Length: 172
Image 1 (cartoon, rainbow, N blue to C red):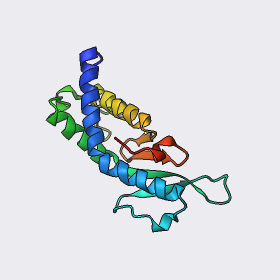
Image 2 (image 1 turned 180 degrees about the vertical axis):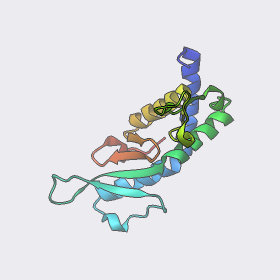
Image 3 (image 1 turned 30 degrees about the vertical axis):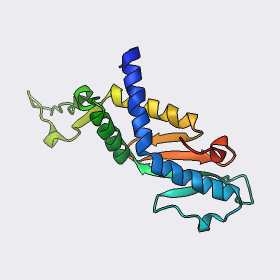
């Protein structure tokens, strides 16, 4: 996927992913604008989203520094996969499975070993294409003034700082 054509295709899919995130981004932006204008965080309409107000531990005033939205990691990957599939980029074809079997255990007087009821079998999915797509989405979000943190198997966190120009300009 690292060719110029592949990069263009990833960028197009990443733009469509951003369209899918548009509702979340707009709520975050509106919340940041309202906080920046002095509205108390508890009075802000968050439309049922898992939205949090980031505060600095060093600041004793407890002033809000930014707006954070959390999205379930699996839900985010599913959204990426759906958008990619609709765009003709088949993520599943590029998924490689790696199966790690447990080591055989030999007893004192045994010629052959056993696997202790197959404890320790591990199956991992590796997909370079999805990682590159995630990176392309993160780059587009950073251009809009957001930071993104991805905690595999937990959450994807979108962070919009209040002292950013993104608060002053609407998302396109």
